[in-house]
Image (tube, helix red, strand yellow):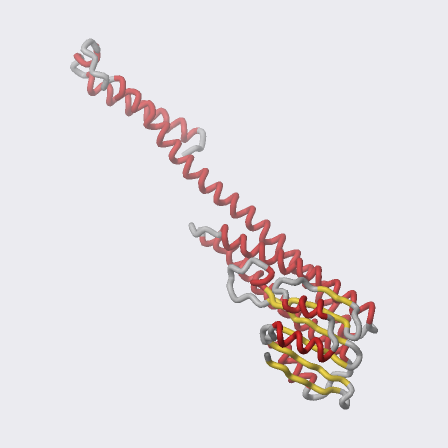
Length: 299
């Protein structure tokens, strides 16, 4: 477990940042700082969803930052990691399993230069950093959707995209679901703290991200429908060619089948030009079917 402590605003505010704790570490820390045991269990639960709880002596905020290492990730636990915040007017405690670049940016830009005036302002910047991870991944998802769309319509590739589109749709849906739950966190902060320009920016960013993820879900759903239609059309084209060939050869197979029965009394077998006549009949039938298909625009 890695613990860092920062003192702000002339030693009136303290920030304790805990990285990668275990059960025993958090239990001891909980007793020392009089934290809710249920909230600590929420911090340890791998797939707990975002929420805001008004507790004593510290309110509890649970958010999830997107952290996707595998492009085939499709569960909440695989796609995101928790960032828990305990907060009151004098103390803020953050607990997270993985290191996050946005926390380091906050430390370098606002904490060390002493540009933070309150725990509420610090919590707002942390939540904004969490939302930035959704913004970054939204751009990546949009680029992947555009790339697949180009391959389907411009490259005429035979590559299958069904699995890739499924994962894109799943990831977009999970991102949207977590943004909806994060709205509860923002509503809690808005109702318990004075509205500030930073909080307004975070609320605006959240609304924009919800709109973007809605658009992503629509785009990937439409693209999946179009891709399945295109694949079905290609299958129909193949079946059309096979059907044309089968229709050509069906009457020819019938003719050679009749004269291949080898009955003793078949008048045509004794004709001098019977063999040539059968060939002429087969060629004529083929030409007639070819002209018919051409007239119907099937060829």
